Length: 407
Image 1 (tube, one colour):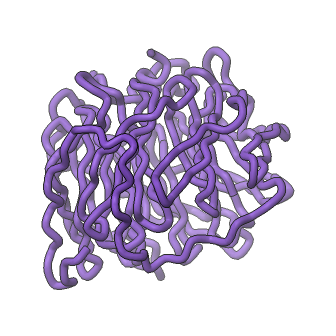
Image 2: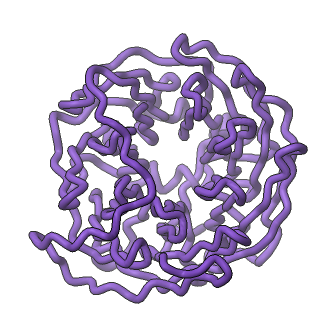
């Protein structure tokens, strides 16, 4: 069993590897593949304001005021478990969170995503008989569930076109595609691909798909597999909902890649490696979907593993923040060379135990951290001109908080 794996508990009560860890403790041309970023220094640059990169092609969303919806993922099995998808609101100015009930009837909704039109919420049902569920917004009517064809689904996303739901089955090491109708309801699965090669990495017993999402250009889908130390690129047939593999990117053996987050420019992405406690800058070529994984870099958390979970990147592309579950911290990086380089700044205490998931509010002013072991959500104010994080208010109590989705 890999110390970096972190599986779910199925309805039969057996602990799988995904949940076990949680219960314990830029410039390249389109015709070329961008070169890996040069290595960073591990020295802290606390108090130093790096030069911001050139303006990103994306425009930051306008500021929002008043109460905004916040949806919280949890596990509904095990000691201290939640009852379903948590409902809350947050004040867009102060960051204060207020509870608002629960959507019941969804088993282990450990990861959440919203449709681009904002009218439907989707949740994984992370159990042996994996499924995905749709919930109508704002009334919170459960529209129904569909099986994913695999066990332990831990991630899902909606294709930018809004017609396809993409999910990753961790325990089975497979990725699935479901159609979405005009109401947002989920149709019968149109494809399922299991990562049968390459062979599992050191300490792994099989493939473990941990993320499945579209690249910013929408032309390719990327699947991050912790078990095979590989990021797979697929092309989606948007008429039939079927997948064709077009390339693979190999991470360092034993890295255990978990989550990939793109820079707003679309040519670089940042990979969090759960097992060996590293990160990497990746070059991305939208012409053919090819990803090039750069050299491993430090998380700034010292020796041993801190189970890094994921990155978020500011809308202006100047800073990245990484959640470290074992270290209970957020690593701050300056992004340089139009996305091609991460420079380690420092780590900031997260104010909770085992930050499983982090997310920025749509306007980028607030960062939410879902802390699994402490059952809390902490909120930070983000200064995207200096990369500073300032914790606001008291942690919001939410049972087994493993996902926070602010809208």
